[in-house]
Length: 365
Image (cartoon, rainbow, N blue to C red):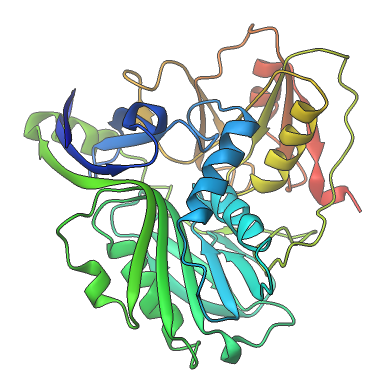
């Protein structure tokens, strides 16, 4: 068993790794969250969110996580990715699962955006700076038929969020028999959250173990005074294209074709919940021979230090009154920057800082 103690300004994070298909250092780094609810941040190295990642590395993590999900799940299978962090991961896991013989399934992701569509349910992520999640009723799919539910998140700590989500969904899935909680890292060892699921449940991950947190009270008081209370607000989105909020079954997604100089290194930036199409574009450019990294903007506030070495601060393109951040993206790296978005606009401050070409996927048909 590998053990690790991580000293942060807000306290001490103690980790015990019990099972690992990927090494801890290949999956995670650590930082301080500017959030009095949870003052530490386990930062994924393979999500393409806080830390830039190669699309091929992201794809391999999706493929390896999907391989841990049982092959005998009765179908149809509903796969749900959690916003904002696991939208891309969940969609990639779904794509890998859909390669299985006789696959019958559907993908949805939760959202913090209000759109013009029938709402299926709402659930809470207790520790998050933006706790409310919405899930919309899928288009053209009979939920009464669903027999298996796969919930995808980047990290499981207590399991409370996934238990809340399963409880919210179960009443809409009368034929549901099995639940799988899939995550890159599962730190919930010894907790009974799987037993609280509304149907028999199991977990799948690339790494599992236990985690404990000993906060520093003085540092937490400082963090509480700087916490952004605007972040919990839901946005309102005029959704011009459906990229997964209203369901996806593997259909081709519209992608622009930016002109990138031959051989130029590229940075692809996803925005908020809009990450999977950005990943597909990054993957296409990498396959064409470019040196590509991807990362994404986020509402999640973090302090400099540890895994967070550089911070850009700008306005949210979904709800401009909310602060957004892009981490570890120092200007002047020589990369061609492509900012991918589904909203009509992007804060010029972000675009200018990266000298970026902004790609409006919502306008692509």
